[in-house]
Every structure is written in structure tokens, then in C-alpha cells.
Image (cartoon, rainbow over all chains, first blue to last red; front, top):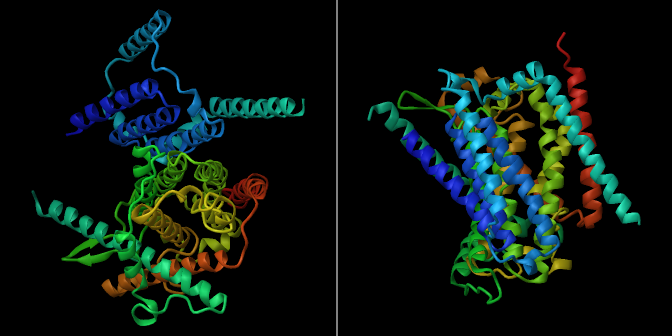
Amino acid sequence: MGDALFYVFGALMVLFTFLTIRARNPVYSAIFMILSFASTAALFVMLDAFLLAAVEVLVYAGAIMVLFLFVIMLINLRAAEHDGLRVSPLVVLVALTFLLLLGRGIADLGPVPAGANELVGTPQLVAKTLFTRYVVPFEAVSILLLSAILGTVVLARRSGEA
Amino acid sequence: MNQDLIFYVASNLVKIIIFTHIALILAALMSLAERRVSAVMQSRLGPNRVGFGGILQPIADALKFIFKEDVVPGHVEKVLFVLAPAIALIPALLTLAVIPFGPPLEVLGREVPLVIADLDIGVLFVFAIASLGVYGIVFAGWASNSRYPMLGGVRASAQMISYELSLGLSVVGVFMVTGSLRMLDVVALQDDMWFCFTQPVGFLVFVICAFAETNRLPFDMPEAETELVAGYHTEYSSMKFAMFFMGEYTAMFVFSGLIATLFLGGWDIPFMSAETFAALGNWGALLGFASFMAKCCAFLFFYIWVRWTIPRFRFDQLMSLGWKVLLPLAIANVLATGLFNLPS
């Protein structure tokens, strides 16, 4: 049952991701991306990582994609429908290299240690890991994000005044 | 199949059916209450012809909705146009799953918690699913392929992002005190003191954001009939139009339930401890359920009360309220909660 569901949601995720780049209308691209995020969340649920699943839906499917749609609708991309997927050899090369590296990385990880499933997902556990062992990287990332936001605001304001 | 499994599946099915029906019937009654209350506030009578005092008006409305012609204009994006009302309604119904309606009931010697799914992540689930509800409005606005709905959809997406952040942060204080995201834990910890007294700022921010999240006046910018005709549902008719309203009223009920659970003690009754509820057995459970529903209905009334009292914001006011007032308030509340609850 669990295995079958994994393949169903995994296949859906790949399918929706493909449709995201295949769709000719940017709004439909965004919709397929939302569905792809939903499939990812389903995979997290199957790992009992409910927190990650909820955050995936809340942040990616809920907030970020709404922002995407907001921008698409605001600048009315309807007119700019592109003529579908164009595959250049360079893209294929980059994608294959990435797949190869990813495959090698996964192979290097080795087999899943026993009992790993019980260790993910509860809010308490995630919080404890983030705020003890990984507190410095965690704060560094938050400062990085903050500076990115500040940079965007500064850039937007400057171009607005000019 | 063993008996426990059968009982589990059956009890959950019954709960799902009952809770969704409570939400949908309340949605229908709300459409009546909205008109009757507004009528009282404006010295009018309101719909009082169908049934005793107009109580059957929602049924008459539903029949009318069903028999009206379902117009799909020729210039719309068909697929999304048809899907959008469903996308608006389904998340609202899904979020009901983690709302605890009362203390556990005892049936056939087994304990049945009055919540469909007692998730570890409780309120995060509600936020995650509720954040999808806005797609109904955004897609409706986009698929309608005309000016006013489009503006409504764009406004909805901007508004949702601005207020969801404050909404999420305003309850962080509660969870810092409880140390758990589970709804049942939150209710259990409010046995002595409701969180609306210990977390007044969080409560205030949450209530304001709840209005914005459900697109209710004074935050109904996506609809704004005085400027956008009818906003995102301008092109909709018949049952599709009704589904948007069912979605809106169900979302209002869910947020009332959330406010009752997180800040008003859930099913708790003042000066009645959890032991008293347990001692009363199933009557205690029913009493708790009644108390919870009373709180929800009181808050639903508050929704209507505010709608017919406060005029709509301008869009820039709405944005500056969200980002410059509510967000800093919510963050300050998190900080203050942390300082007041330092581990000694």
C-alpha cells in the first residue's frame, strides 16, 4: 500500500513538474507547479513528516505560488504566451549533468539507517535540531534572506525614484 | 477486519458527515442571519415570509439557485472557470478536520474524540489548507477574463499574503505557552485561564486577520461591490455563485472555531474544570459541544455585526495596516511572550 502510494505520488510529481514547463500559458504553469508541490507534500506525509508537509503546502503552494500568480496577473502575461517547450542541446547537457551528480550523491548516501523514519517530522524534533545543533547555519540563512529582502527593497525604491 | 478498525472507520465517517453538515447548515443559516441582523440594525424587517420568521428562507434560496440558468460566458477559460468555485469551497471544508468540537464522547464502551483528525501539527494544517482557499478567488478572477473579476483576483492574492503572515505569527505566542501545536493540548491548557486574557495582543491580531482571510468587510476588497461590481464572482451565476458563498461562510465558521479553540478555551466553560466534564460523562461531552457551538455562533454574530457597522478600507490602508501595524504587533507579541515566560 505504502509503496504503491509512493509511486503514484512520485509519478504525479514528475508529471506535474513536466507539465509546468510544458504549459504554454503561464497561469497553467503556476497551477501545475502548485499540484507538483502538493504531490511533494503527499510524499512527506508518507514519511510521517507532517510538519514538513504542512510547511510545504503553507509556504510553497500557499504563499509563494500566490505571489507568482499575483505577478503573472499584474503584468498580464496572457499576451506573452510562449510557443511551448524548446529544447536546446545545452539545456539537455545541464540537466543530464545535474541528474548524474544527484544520482551519484544519492548512491553515496548508502542504505537508509533503520529507524530513520521515526526521527523526522515532529515539530518538537525539528525545533530542537534547528535551534541547537544547527543554530548558527540557521541564523546565517535568516540573515542572508533578510539582506536579500533589504536589497530588493532598496533596488525597487531607487528605480521608483529615478 | 477486527472490531477496533471497523469502529474507528465508522466513527470517523459519522464524524465527517456530522461536522461537515453542521458547517454547511450553519452556512445556510448564516445567509439568513446576515440579512435579518442587518435588517434589524437598519430598522428594516428583512426576509421573514418563508417559514416561521423566515427560517426556511435558505431553502427557498437554494431552490432558486438550483433552478437559475447557469451562465458560462463565452470569453472565459472554461476549465478554471468551472473549477474555481469548488477550489474555494473544498479547503474550507477540509480545515474542519482538526477543529475539536467537544470533549471525548463515550460510545459502545470506546472513547471517541470529537475531532476528525487529532494531528500533531494541528493549527498548521488549518493555515496550510486555508491558504489554498484563495486560489478559488484568484482563479475565478483570472478565468473570468474580464476587468473587474481580474482586479478582484489580484487584490485577493495581495491581501492574502499580507495577512497570512500576521495570522500565523499572532498564534505563535499561544504555542510558546502550550509547547504544542495540537488543538486538544491547547484546549486542555486553557482550563484555568483562556488565552484571550493572557494573550490579548495575539487575540486582537488574530481576530483582525481572520476577517481579512475570510474576505469579510471591512476587508472584502476582492468583492467590493461599490467599485468592482461584484469583484471575482461578477461572471458567476446559479450554483457556482452559491458555492463561493458556501465557501465563504464555511471559512467563517472554521475561523470562528479556531478563535474559540485557540483563545476562548475551546469547549471549556468558565469555572468548570476538565474533571467536572469527565465526571458528567456523555452529558459533559454534549455540554462541551454546546459551549463550543455557542462560542462559534457568538463569533459568527460578531462577524455580521462588524460587517454592517464598519465601512470598507481603501486598498492602500489595508496594505499599510497589515504590514505596518499588525505584523510588528504580532512580532512584538512573540518577543513579549518569550520574555514573560523565560524558563526559570
